[in-house]
Image 1 (cartoon, rainbow, N blue to C red):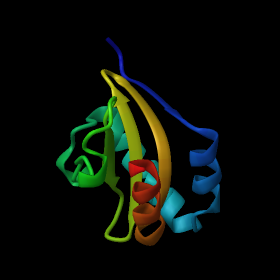
Image 2: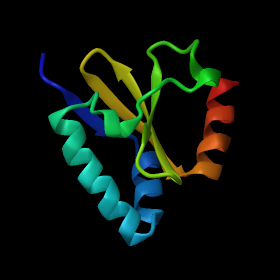
Image 3: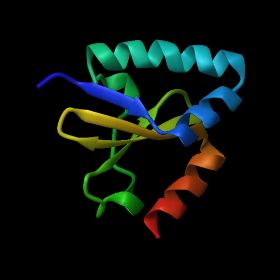
Image 4: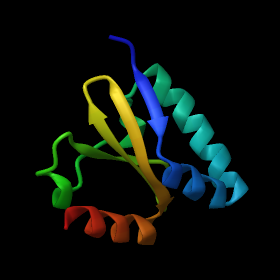
Amino acid sequence: MALRSMGTATFWQQYLALPEPIRQLAQVAYRQFLQDPWHPSFHRKKPGALARLHPPIYEFRLSRQYRALCQVDGEAYCWVFIGDHVAFDREVRRLAR
């Protein structure tokens, strides 16, 4: 099965609100993701508060301060969040409810 990747409308709003250097960093990371979704540079993991969700949501590290969240169902990836660590923590708490 081929990898499928899409972003929610909210994800794209968040992406467009990022500073330009971070958007460029996200573009580079996304190209790497398309080559290898499990590349170690992403530090891909399930946030503990979201461990019970199915399909699972994974955290992808873009930099020390920026993260993305992606719901993974087999080879289908749905990007649900991108932003700084403060917004990331807030989103994880919201999703964990």
